[in-house]
Amino acid sequence: MTERLHHWIGGARVAGSSGEHFPSINPTTLEDLYEVPRGNEEDVRKAVAAAKAAFEHDSWRRLSASRRGRLLRNLGDLIAEHAEELARSESLDNGKLLREMRGQLATLPEYLYYYAGLADKVQGSQIPATNVDILNYTQREPLGVVGAITPWNSPLTLTTSKIAPALAAGNTVVIKPSEHTSRTILMVAELASQAGFPDGVVNVVTGYGAEAGAALVAHPDLAKISFTGSTATGSRIAAQAAARFIGCTLELGGKSPNIVFDDADVANAAMGVIAGIYAAGGQTCIAGSRVFAHKAVYDELLERVSERARSIRIGDPLAAETELGPLAFADQLDKVASYVDLGVTEGASVRVGGGRPEGLDLPGYFYQPTVLTDVDNSMRVVREEIFGPVAAIMPFETEDELVALANDTEYGLAAGVWTQNLARAHRMARRLDAGTIWVNTYRAMSPMSPRQGFKSSGVGIEHGLESMHEYTRLKSVWINTDEGPVADPFVMRG
Image (cartoon, rainbow, N blue to C red; front, side):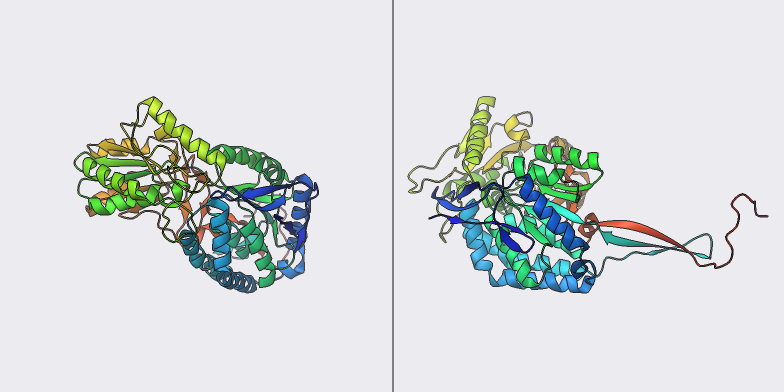
């Protein structure tokens, strides 16, 4: 019998109010893994009420910032203890390589430790006043209940990027995980209780975005929304947040350029292109899906990337020898396949891949690593986010031409640059319109380094000290230290 999970509300497992459930499907075997409640407005109401009560209770509100940090550290330790179980669960849920998920789980406690250290470093300041009797200072306060709507591609890492700074700042949270990957978020919510977080500080409501997610965004007691997902959904969330004058942090789509100049180490650049688009099956917002190669190295780069793409071993993500697992769910497979077909219709040539792998003894949502050539920036397959293992490789001649091509996109999440020219590296970092620029590497990440999407790639900052300000409000306090009589405001002073 398929295991049936529950919401996590107020420090306890809570059955869904509708009684309806739906399965999470293993994308490798197409078997049901478990079932979760189909959350609705009533479930969200309970979760937000629990979070609001916890925010207002002395057990959390009067807890010192240093002790909040200690709880985050406890949670990091518990995640480290359960790392293998969590990594395996995520790999089963979304089809990512088990060794990749093990790598994420190995670094995930560092996110908690980092924000644990920041919990008591959020400070105000004293402001000089023109009147020596006035003391003016600022202080930062938590917002209240934060709603976190998180994706399926790296569930724990991307959820932690939201809830760690939110909790460090003193907020409480309600998480709506992706309907495709709910288990590990529920597991970590229970670990938060074991770590010592008061009941109601961390809550999880499972369900579909159009139901549970929409109800969470619309709840009047929410102080902020933090969302990672598609640009179209992020736009709707931003409009709702603006209408209610609450904050939102949005980490959205990308169509990132990975640029190889003529002076680059082409072997290294080819591995960077492979890592940028085929690692994680291309199912990452920072995927380097638009590859620009200088005409002097275009042929060599194309051959190196194509050769390695052909040899990537596709199979069970739990197997040590596998290099590419399945796409996460059926709709994603259909989307990737339809975009490749569209690219061919637009005039693109399929150099490598372009379809389902043959001879694979697994029924899952597998798609070959694909290289498209004969493409240009006007094609939809180049302009729109595919979110799969599809690279479009294009030549360029001059630096100015490259900058114009790379910036000719609605997105601005990330960019990669491969060059041995130090001056050019700095020029590209300045000229490329993206929030993260990698030079001679790709996909480097750290909780200490702030990340922001430009243009349609998002609003707000995740990671780093700057992210703490996303989850606080600034208050200015004015105190008159003169105990003498207050002057009549209508009597002019000499």
